[in-house]
Length: 358
Ligand code: AMP
Ligand code: MG
Image (cartoon, rainbow, N blue to C red; front, side, top):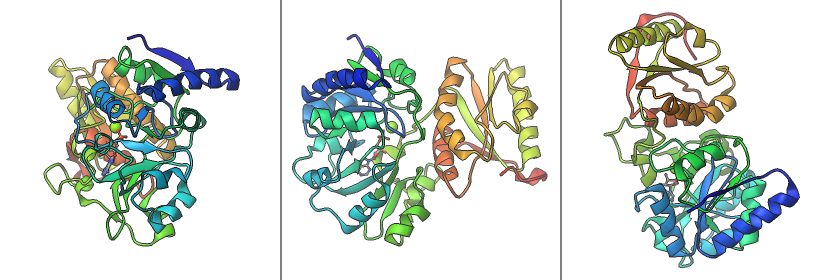
């Protein structure tokens, strides 16, 4: 299959391309499109055969449910068994935006879309191309991230083409996404709402609107702890091909440790990648040293993370060492993705002393 890539940005051309894409969705096909979080791979959410194609194209396990994207708040009632009060409050505060809510589904949503679950994940994206596609197709669009299963999520149309070129008919190219990490997922079917995946919308932001919110202990555990409730969070996701280790501790100790490991690996003939920041990148001796940006600019770090993981693949790094990024804001989401990419391989070097890295 040939994949057509349409650049978005010029309004008239956009409508012609989005209209072609909308026809593909209506006829049960797949379209990759930009959202503010990452690129999505979309299909008609209420057409079971269309939803199945998403799993096939991504190589995604069929128990990993899709997120249904809507363009207007009233669309929620079309797929919900009932719309919880807290869903209305959160929608008012954060939609359109990077927040996915889990609610009980009704029969309009097939089990192919929800991975066999009686609940459905719903989000209203904050991106004009995504919204226009939903509106022009007249369908709700089920869309996971538009990467091959297991690879880092795409933040550029080029990433989608790398993974899915030849497998889907259309990619709508909206340039680099704004946020770069997947949406926060909050489960409203629990007595106390539960965060199943951290993202740009933090626990504190949710609590300001709906009161107490908990975080799924399964997403913080290092692999063998509690099982995460979002089926997708149990897979080794977001991963570059090289083995990645996060080195955690004070700035000087982290630099010293990463350089020591780099020398050891290079002596064995391995190509070493290092993920640093603008403040530290010059201090490393790796073959590929990439900076995520200035440490205090978390938005830039979030936006660049997946892109940089893919760059290490292109550069054929064998091993990667990364600094750690835990902070109370989006740092939690950054660390969650980094730890998953690393398969929870973390080296703690705090005992070396020195000034704190964060
Ligand atoms: P992706 O869009 O590729 O980031 O994947 C969607 C994420 O949402 C995966 O981690 C899924 O497991 C999660 N998800 C979707 N629907 C549900 C649901 N009904 N219950 C729990 N998690 C869900
Ligand atoms: Mg994904």
